Length: 145
Image (cartoon, rainbow, N blue to C red; front, side, top):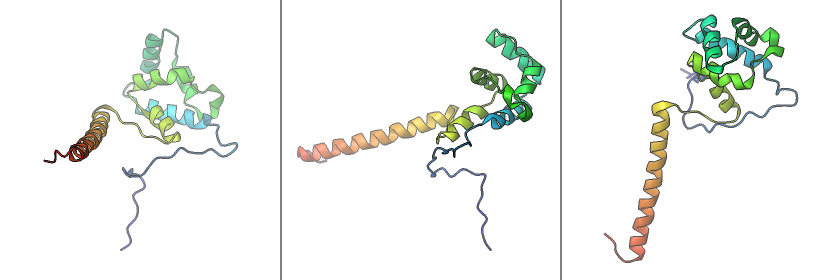
């Protein structure tokens, strides 16, 4: 029986690489609109509440109609301003834009405990290298254990 490769599960050993756009393929307006729509769809509150919270936190007026325009691929000339994305992610409890941008640039993002575990692993590797260097120095000094 032939095994089918799981395309949805990330390979933890695969090294991410930036996506190199071809000439004319770097206009992400439709993708940004679709991503706004996905973020709003997955949001625990409705668009009226998202608009109200964004208005409250930014001090500017953000309406439900603006959210509708930002999420419509047919209205890509009305994309969400870049400075609004962190606020949208905060209100909708999402990391979709952050993950998308980092993916385009060839990276991966870790949040919360995953970020701490990555930092712990990095420091553990540094500690192992330092310990190995200390053992080598002791050996050179004639103080083998």
